[in-house]
Length: 143
Image 1 (cartoon, helix red, strand yellow):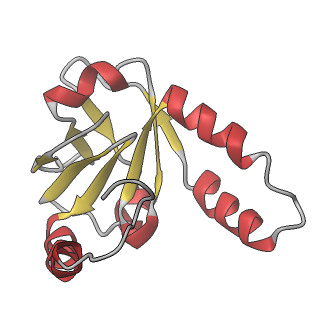
Image 2 (cartoon, helix red, strand yellow):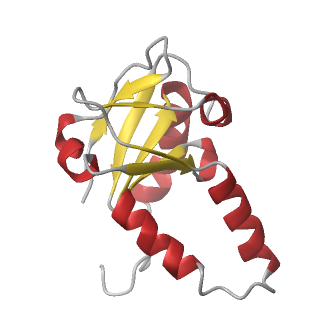
């Protein structure tokens, strides 16, 4: 499980240092791909393989499933972090997420997300009131 918020910097080679708490889970390999809300998703390779298998169950006739898979897999990049826990984010993914120097890396349960720092602050400010005001079950049995 990935938890927490971290603020690493993107270096001049397009690399970001993964938080130390995440490195063991990602050391065997990871997949970076386009996420929703213009962030990047970082999946442990095993988790991405399970996701791929589950997505393969969608009928090929479902246009929304085809569209989603095309965008997700066409932008995917697999990598093994170096000894310092750095991963290189390809230029196309940096452009998609508008990543410059200041980044935010968050734990999102089974995946990690990488955001442009300004985009994350805007997203969080926009969503925190709704989070505080939830008055019904978002997840069955949770509240």
